[in-house]
Image (cartoon, rainbow, N blue to C red; front, side, top):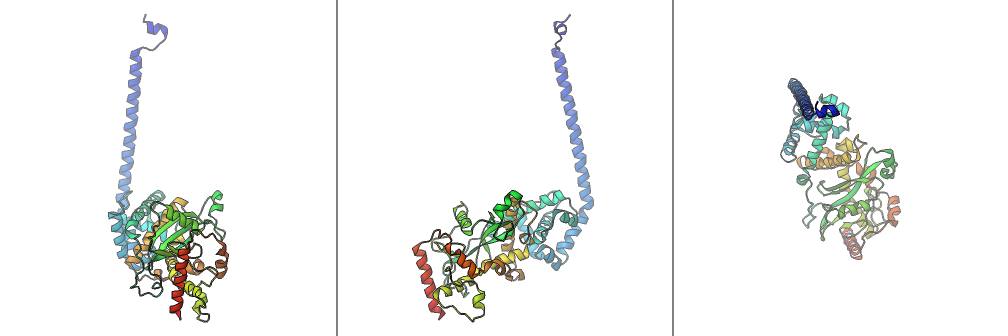
Length: 398
């Protein structure tokens, strides 16, 4: 009798046969899985072939058939749409995926940004699944952000040949910096951090705008409770953040300090434009003249915010995305704003001032309340520069 059998231990031959049997079963299982996946892929490709004409007809009716329909639904006409589609393919690395062509990628995303529509509504309109709509929109937004190197250009300082009276007094100025609040949806444990002074959760977004209504720098992501000066310090401390040359500066409001590179108005003086609009109460001091002309020039940031929120409804009301995705959406909207401003400079939406009517024209009460704010970065040299500029404006005002 065999010693292995008598002791109850399996023989080496039996162990080898068991391992071979397990390997064969595993191979059979893998072959079966590959067959199932291949059959599913064939069914999807066949469904795509059957529905291709229907999907292309939807895009044709939405984009290529009538200019007015394209403008109302996608916030731009056919020619700018086609050029942006080519830019996304060449520079944004956007490709046809999930049976969706590049122009359908862009149409779905612009429809979401322009009307702030839920995923299920878009999936019904374009006859796509909700998962496909979500992937398409996220992929397109990231492709739009890749275009920021082309569309978010460096600002050009105001020179002596400037003919616009609003900016001719500010030689060397790069533009205006201001912040705006974007409504968002956050969890209950984050509402306290994101709650703004009006009582609802927002994201405080800082933008730098040029006199030609272009956005040169944007920093989203901060809570609505964060102060403007704190966000500016963060923008300056970033590796690829805001850069201000020594001989240039930006116009800022009373939420920021009057320091090197940032020219703020005089606190405690009249500032909002409505007090000088009627002409009954002219400026009485050099400080008021400076504030009046400062407000007229800095109002360009309010115009940019107004055009942004007027065109893209996703920025006017809380969108249905998390904070991280909302940050990407805001950057993508800024890129689209610059693209349309350069391609369609006479667009009516660029001349609408909505933000300035609500937030941009600070009242005297807010000016006086901010008199006690921290004077971060203020220097005697920059204060003297502002005083001399106010005296020069006062001399030319009379």
